[in-house]
Length: 107
Ligand SMILES: [Zn+2]
Image 1: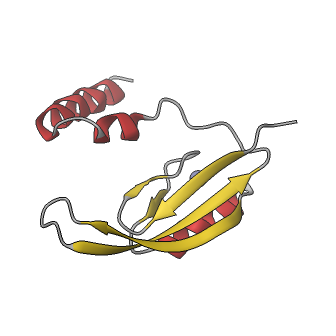
Image 2: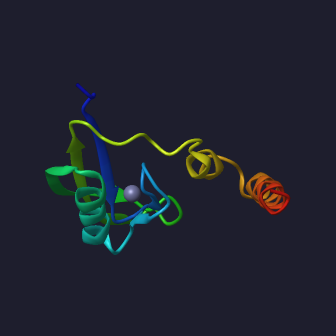
């Protein structure tokens, strides 16, 4: 059968769902968890909180996280453009995003 996989949503990071372009995470933590559950058949396996530090101020931040598991999840969206973009410096990211957008409009 299909492979089990995990997904997580947390309150500090907003991103796309692993399977579609719906935005998950951030303040609407429950919305993201519900999305995984209702749209893609995930079940919540862990709800928790932890403290991390703000990368800019060094102040402690309270973070909540929901971890979900699916036993036979749908295919991941490909390519994971958003994750790749998020790892790039902002200037590069803008250039790449511009190129991607212009490719889109050309069909
Ligand atoms: Zn989704």
